[in-house]
Image (cartoon, rainbow, N blue to C red; front, side, top):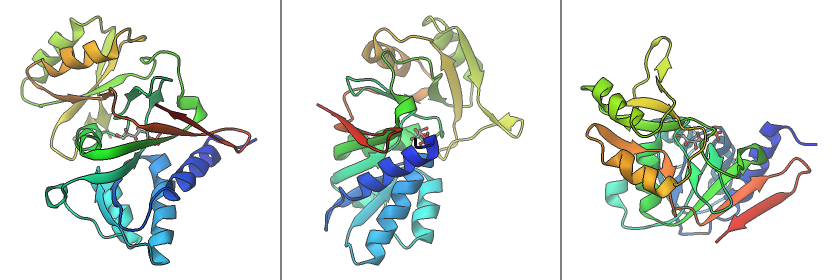
Length: 227
Ligand code: 5RP
């Protein structure tokens, strides 16, 4: 039986094989994507020619250390494929993302991508989204007002994310509110409601964005959920 870490690795390495020569490739963020970046860098060292863009400073640093050249999103028209992780996935390919705090850039890169491939271990698969607290990126100014509006959406608990006892700051200078909904009945509607609140920059619900989900299973196999 594979450990959770080994399942992440299996999914990441499998996804690296999907990248074809000449692909404009989006690189996600997180501990599963870590394995994807390593495997992709191995292929680049062997001569795979790609153009890459990233979803976070963390991934940019790792990719560059391993020899992948990063292009700014403004210098890219379309992304052929993006490989990213998720905190929860359901069998309709809806996602909760943002556990690593990179959801804003992740959603922008996903929206520019022809194909969004999600890699995950099988513990991330749920019947209904919501057990994982939904990350919502907010502007620091007046964030307590923003929190009040979010609380009005049947949210049971809202936690300002911290790192080393001070508010966690995203790559784009914002805060993250981790919002406990327990079960999200209508993810699309909630996403629209959240993004209508003044002060909300973006939320971690990725609705109808993923093309396929690659899941590393405990028995070492790979399971794919696709449209
Ligand atoms: C970062 C993300 C990550 O993709 C998500 O948190 C999954 O990360 P991991 O692979 O480490 O479990 O959305 O903002």
